[in-house]
Image (cartoon, rainbow over all chains, first blue to last red; front, side, top):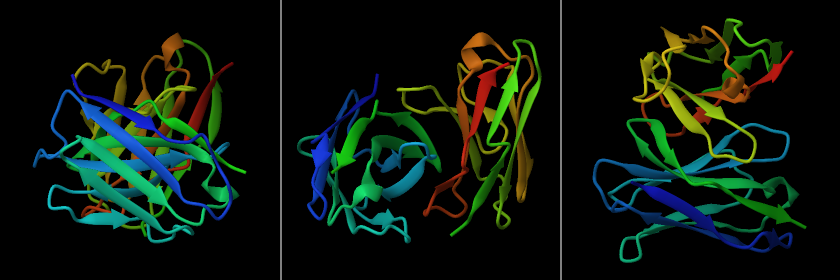
Length: 117
Length: 108
């Protein structure tokens, strides 16, 4: 059974870089049939897709994000990572990693709360 | 970017009620539309994909319909465990993905 677990700092200072890791178990992260994504939910708001990365290594990001973002995969560790640079209070949210297939985000991690302050 | 307008943003309903949520896309997205349920403190859960296909294991009281730019999500008989927030999500031609604003279903 696939399991995803996000980890990283709960508190980040403004203008610093937020780094999160998603550890995948029960399945290989380099499976051609799937892609991997980061999504967040700010307090009192809805879900926001941040970006996705495919087997080829190509990553796509939400165009209107205010803070620069990088998503990468470390297949040797079966991990997905997210870096958000120059964070602001607007980056405060619960961050989720997910596995996608044909446009649907089928499996999700439990999420990790990140506060920028 | 494709914008998704979901309505209502919240509603109050009783157990046994029929509930319908609407999602409007800013352009034609064919049937590239999914629905999720999220409970407080939990991860979102995929319920319906490709507008109308029920994911395995999801109760049949949940259904979805629509194509083009207008979609609906229906719970035929609301159960106590269905009180949650529901989101639509489009994926027309791949990324970027986008979500509707969500509908919070509360107990009347």
